[in-house]
Amino acid sequence: MSTEGRPNTLPNGSPFFPLALCSGAIPAFHGNGGWYTRGGWHEHSFAIHLATDTCTATPPRHRVNFFETPVSKNKKKWRKWRRNCCVATFNAWHLEHLPPAPEFQPGAMQVLGILCALLLAVNARGWVVVSPTNVSKALLPTDRGANVAFLAGRYTSAACDWFASKRYKSLVIQGAGSPNTIIDCGGRQWLHATRFTTVSISGVTIVNASVALNTAVTHVILEDMACTRSGNCFAIMMAKTVSMAHVSVSHASSGPSVIQATGSITLSHATFQDVQSADGGGALKLKTGTKLVLTDVAIERARAKNGDGGAVLITDPYAAATVHMSNIRIDTSSASGQGGGVYIMGSSFQKVTVQDFWTFNTSAPAGGGALHVSTIQELHLSNAQMEMCQASEGECCYVM
Image 1 (cartoon, rainbow, N blue to C red):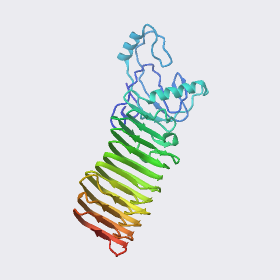
Image 2 (image 1 turned 90 degrees about the vertical axis):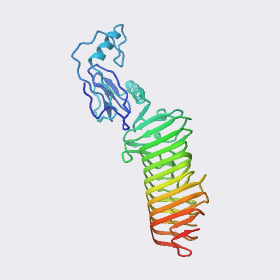
Image 3 (image 1 turned 60 degrees about the vertical axis):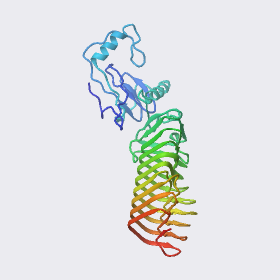
């Protein structure tokens, strides 16, 4: 037995569903339908292939239905022969362009091809696999937990306006990498998820969304996710924990990425470019419960039109909390109020640590051209370099 392509696993290591078959043919699953010949399924764009070795034994006599499964009384013998002779494994991650089959023209069989594609897209192990050609509201889960795999390609707004809500379940969304899986929402919202225990997203880029991700769930995990040319990228409300790594935001025009968590917020290896908000926090508006950690964050060209924190606004936490910021780079940001780069306010902060902090060309007319910290508790500031900052009193850093 041999199988084309990579091992039959999804990107996270989970096995894809097996398909027992010993017909000697090479069937194919594909995203936008097609027609069936004895050589398999064919269509214009792509196919995912199953390769089998030719069996040497002769199968028992039997009649078969459309899917080449036995429907006669000899089906037990046929199944035993199939089990002993060969078992093929469906490899859902090997793509190959195929020419259209010359025997048939698309027609009634194309409809059946689409139905079969949808059937195979929802596999027995809980993965929903979508492609730019087969994505639809019918495939995207709305009222149940699921694992959704977006194959590489550029998607239209058919993959947007996605509302999903289910208590005590998880929603896992996995693309083929943020440069490879691009979802263009055409001004619509991409995903609004509520009540889930966990929402985990990786490997996608959202483009032209009014709001890319709007969630009110317990745990949020984002990795290798990008958002560009959108109104608001992230609106994460009342989570317990939020973890974001390798996130990129650019050209967000309607507001900052708002992240609120009653527990902890961790943001690392993130970039923000050309972002602004109508009020405070040009790039980020954060509110935590116990701990806020920002590491390796770079922000360029951010603006808070009518508020504090030209790049980052950290508001009073839900409870006694700590803030740790390290390796923060801010190049060109402004606020109409205080804190041209970063504004931290709140008497509930127990400890604020800012280290390896660099700003350039920041301004805030009301004070703290680069950094403004308003807390009566402990502040540790080390290895900070603030250049070309402007404020009413001329100070780059203001602490009260």
